[in-house]
Image (cartoon, rainbow, N blue to C red):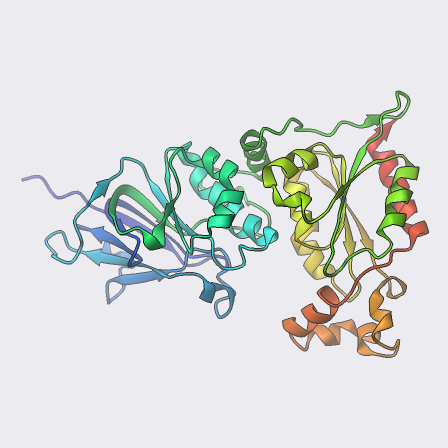
Length: 395
């Protein structure tokens, strides 16, 4: 009698960003109760004493007591072949499956991209469309927003894991998606050696974007480089935005303004971003759209007052080199923040901003991110625009 087929399984719990498990063989997924059954003989080296492993398939593991509590737990359960507990297959698939969540902070576009879209590409792209995506914490609005990306990643409709009462059997299942860093991929850690440029090329294909590169505009022939100004309304807004737009136009840019309503249609806005040579905005989720810029384009991040470089650098400065983008920053001074209208100059907000950070994230967030707008020095801003203009044009 032939030996029974061994079901292979492996889990990686060593990353600070995510837990992931991969199972190959007799794997049965029952979404409604949130269980993945690993059936048959296995290598028990990773099997816990109680035969189960819980995984929250979202890429922000270090925020265990906050963000991750908004993510449904998926339980991987080991069962012997002759065990009566694993349910029988009602649907059999010939392709692998990837289980991930649209919970957590997915409502914020930065987190949509860094916690879900990039890790999902890194995990599922290798199957060249022949993969079934199963989504827990199913967010219908977000799935619709990402429909072009998801359709390029998988030829099959996305399945709402939480309401699916079918028992689906797959030859291979991955629970969790592989995340390496904010808005980035580390090729040495990627199973297929993917890079952020691979990811951008995938986005260009998914959204039919025309430009892979941003060639310099020719001043002699009258070409004007396109500058995209990302607007903010509720916080960190530019109070003198109209003056900033005039200054950019006078330097020589063709200026495109992106308000909150414009960015809602992801596919259309991706085309707008890809048509631009420069993106300018105060630190915030809107700058995440830099993933649609062509290579050699320039990102200008306006850093709010309050010793906020660490957050701004991690989110938008550090990822740009891997995408072939040039990064420029404009750091707001105490004279340029509306916080001067709320606090005296001898307040810690101005004399020791880091002491506010030390009071906790909520306090820092409420003052320096949600509590201020910006009135930029137009002369200083014009100088920055002139330097960028020289870089993105030729005579």
